[in-house]
Image (cartoon, rainbow, N blue to C red; front, side, top):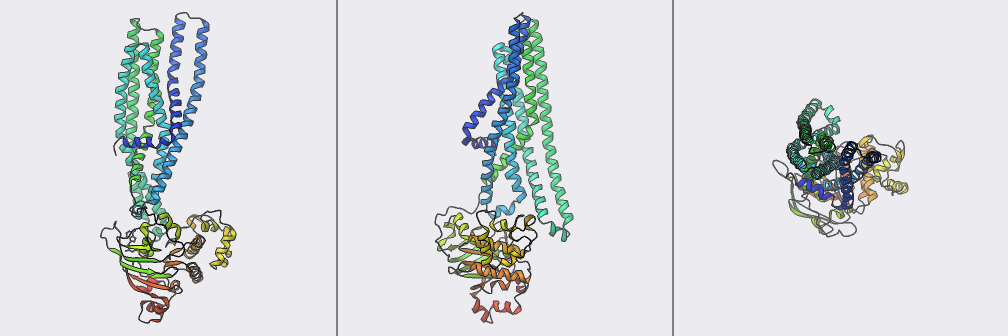
Length: 586
Ligand code: ATP
Ligand code: MG
């Protein structure tokens, strides 16, 4: 990323807000010029007093000076207001663009990027940008106006002095920019290190139970320490740059003051300037101090913003391998499924092997099929293919006669419903977990759904019924109960194509019965693929598919397979239906 293009990208973001931007520029132009007026007034006061001007003149000058002070305060409020407003508008759009973009990225991206890192990129980086616009960019622009104005005023009053000051400022500012550009790299390194640290923490906290029970605690602490050390090292690097810049800007100011005093003395001796002008020249180099040191103090913001912008653009450049350019809508009603010679390989694996291997499967509209197979046989991968979270490496999948790649993703997601292997619940009431915070769904409708799925007894057995509060991430419910919530969630949406990936954890017999009954009701009249980890789940489904290393090992009507003693399904049944399948198949 070149030094300029990320700033240009930032400027492009403000394009829809041209009016606000021009108002801000206007306000800044006034605010930036005001500091020049004070010294001018005092200079004419000094000259007036020296040359015996009227008392009235001097009082007027003094009065205007006081008015100017008030005006400067008002202008600084106006600047803060317009700048913050613009900054938030621009960056909020960026936040939602990024969020949408990230949500649309494919599985490979999300596997390689932890949620914590995404938070730091979507929120942290963008906040750095809005800070930058609202604070630094505005101060820098006002300072620039002040600097230019100062040179112009001096050029008018005494052009050789004005020229000298212009040359001196040119060199000083160019030097500052050179130092600053170096600092940008340091900031990007620090941001990246912080992102990794957040990612670590997030992952470790999510897996805290597993880590603790498996004695992985010390390893977690060690990696945390390494990540923290990297943050420390990179932030020290950035601090050093900041301090260097601060020292440099102070040196600029002190040198400027010294030069101005020397010039003043020389010119006064030759009577080339009035005392007022001498004051003005010196005072104008003093004006530099405030903006320059404020900017130096805040170069950190520039560094953060530039680092953030670079990483934001990188993120926006990430492309999903799933192209959403289909235009054919799915036909109404239940949808027939047709999988034709599909092979799938996870591309990000070191030694890619086909997880789904030349698999073909037809399922008539409205029928349900249970998928069995040992762990790692490719069941979840098959589900991902059907939802187009990944595309087949070879072969094609059609739903309702249309190739999935030709269906707009939005249509596909609307018509299909999924309960994944690890149901995500929120720290909210059961009601909110089922409706997913959709307040338009009435309690009556909710109760009807629970009744349809035969879950009224279960929900009434909860401490506060629908109002029962779940802990963070839905803690307080068993895995089976989580499935019940997810099933009801799905039932409310009434999708035409249903995909269930049953949790592989053990569940108690009562909950298991409830899950089985709910699934039974849910798949009725819908095309459904149910990945099962328990035989009891598939017993009532129309058909059965046994998957082995990505290939169809067995396929048939449930009743036929049950009655055929040579079938794998019959063999499984012989072992017993209350045992989790993984143990049986193995
Ligand atoms: P389980 O019964 O444990 O849920 P499964 O049949 O659902 O197993 P899959 O999750 O489809 O199995 O995994 C099949 C194979 O693909 C496994 O070897 C797994 O390691 C690999 N795999 C799964 N997901 C990914 C992924 N996102 N990237 C790379 N490889 C993956
Ligand atoms: Mg799975």
